[in-house]
Structure formats: structure tokens, C-alpha cells
Amino acid sequence: MSADDSNERVQRRYDRVAPFYDTLESIMERRAAKWRRDLWTEVIDGDVLEVGVGTGKNLRFHPARARVTAIDIAPKMLERAQRRADLKGSPVMLERADVQALRYPDGSFDVAVATFVFCSVPDPVLGLRELRRVLRPGGRLLLLEHVLSEGRWLRKIMRGLDPITARLVGAHIARETVASVRDAGFTIRDVRDLALDVVKRIDAVAP
Image (cartoon, rainbow, N blue to C red; front, top):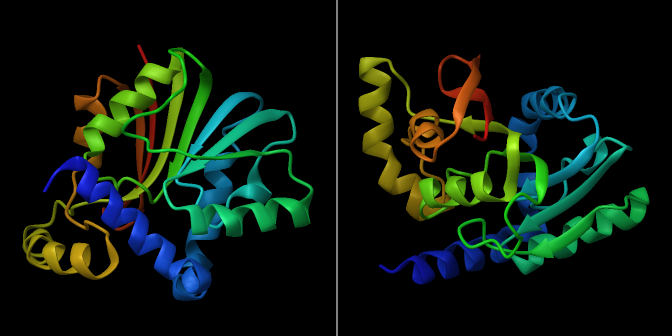
């Protein structure tokens, strides 16, 4: 399958679930909202790129002094995010874009943020390299991601289930995202386990 085909499948999947996406994630969001809020407290100001804005769950955490551009590959998700932004009076700039092929010039942003996104990106290392490119030297990458466990049995189970979750909901649960961040050329500053060793907060810097 080509990257373009994969992108189209991701877009179609998220467009289909956009009307009830927040309901589907409501149980997980009871915990994830705190993780999101805490991650965004690391962002104070500057030019910020949010990847995979989805329905706009993070809009309420955007710092007032930051200039935030938020992207998503799925138009229907962006429509939901725009409604949220309008209700909130948020100045966020919402744009349709693919993180694997960003249109922004090199060094456009001070910070890039993504929450539970790279499990769905067809080529995560390519997407992370694009983020490294559009970040200024020393720019920060802040991620929340669910990743493959280091535990022997849980790791085996996750690898077995990965093809099923990828097909059903578009999420790869067996990705090693910390390694992908390094492979993309970032320097890891900090990695924190939030739920066992499966949900991680990753803080990295661009060279």
C-alpha cells in the first residue's frame, strides 16, 4: 500500500467517526484530559504547531500568548474543531495538512505538540522528521503517545492485537515512538510513564 493510499484511509476513517468521536473516547478522556492539560503547561508563548487537532480537545489548553496553528488530515474533524474554536473565541489557525508532507518553511515554529496522534500516522518517522524540519533549532517536541510495552507478556499481546486495532480504529498499539523520535533526529530530554509503561509523555528538542 502506498503512503498516499494509507493517508486516504486514515482521512476516510476519521471523517466517518468525526460526529461521534468525542463520545467514543469519553471514558479514556477522563484520564487523558489531565495529561493533555499538564503537557500544554509546558507551552508559554511563541509559534506553536499542534498536529492532529482532531475535534479540538486541546483548544482550551492553548496558552493565550502563543500563536497556534493546528492541523489535521481529516476535513470533518477540522469542522468540529472550528466549531469549538468559534464557541471559545479561540484565535487558533486551523488548517488541513499531512504531517508527513508539511507545507511550512524550515524553522517556522518554536514548539510542536501532538497528543495520541503518531499511532495513526502511516510513516511516523517521516512525520517526525517533518516536525524536526519545521522547528527552529532548539525547538521543542511535546508528545503524548501510547506505545509498545516493555513487559514480555503485554508486549506479546499488544503485537498480536496491533493488526486488529489498526484495521478497526486506525491505531497501531505496538509502535515504539520513543525510538522513532530518536530516529527522526531529535534529542530526548525526558520520557515519563503515565499509565504503566504504555502511555508516555515525551519531551524532545530539535538540533
